[in-house]
Length: 138
Image 1 (cartoon, one colour):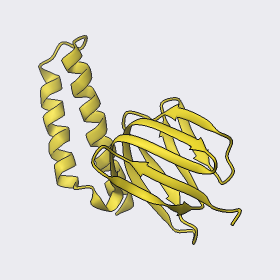
Image 2: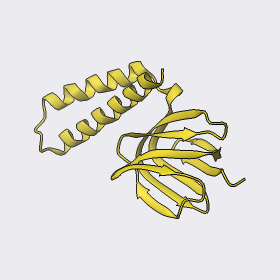
Image 3: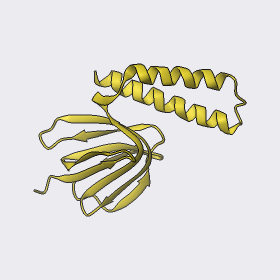
Image 4: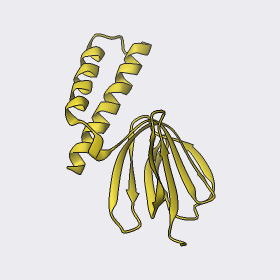
């Protein structure tokens, strides 16, 4: 069928998605990408803390959290290889809040030019992105 794109979302722990979809948008490091069937081959890095929105073949939409990795389109297959990923209904809001609080606490005592500060700031961005995505979808 010409209106289908095959989507595969893979993390180190599992394959989140492995099916045909109508389209996908996701956050790359240099902006938001929209992928439709028959997209030209490409490869790009994923945002450190972002999201993807899947439009199913029946028009329903599904969101997921993505973190780091890369995206590749080749032969009508979009593959997202993520350091971490969760479907929106799997996100534990309380755990995301706790991670945000922990990262904020750690940031308060660090030199902003240190490697630890950069890592804590990245953790904060991930926690906030997960929480925002879960709240927006509920």
